[in-house]
Image 1 (cartoon, rainbow, N blue to C red):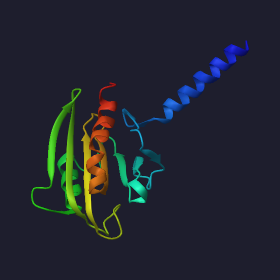
Image 2 (image 1 turned 45 degrees about the horizontal axis):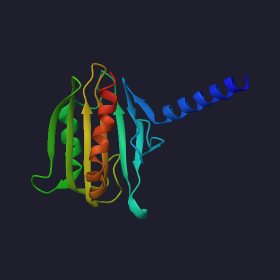
Image 3 (image 1 turned 90 degrees about the horizontal axis):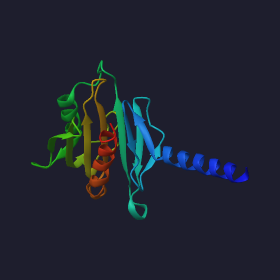
Length: 174
């Protein structure tokens, strides 16, 4: 009987640990990349928020998730791509939009680098030079899921593989 109780407790602990490594936004369940942290969303509009710690005390990056339902409220894919890119003073050719199909789902990847403009809604108070954006817009019948990562250029660039893995973790489960 004692062994069964220990086994049950172990399974519960493992399930709890696994659940802490995933989070849901709309119809998708994402796997939290190793080394990233889930943090309380900074506003009610955000459905989830992650933090990528900077190295050796350097500034970290934020990954934010938004979903406004099928009624929209945030505009479509192109409106958000333009809004995100407009939050940066980027060098010519630095901004890219890449349409993908991942596991049968349309995903638009958005990236840019330069100075993130300060004083904008939801953004930094001051301009942030040498910053980058890596975003994804996942299309769904219940409305798109918007994922936007911003932070120091080097940190965002080195986090790209984990970012894409996180997106694939949700889309390939379906």
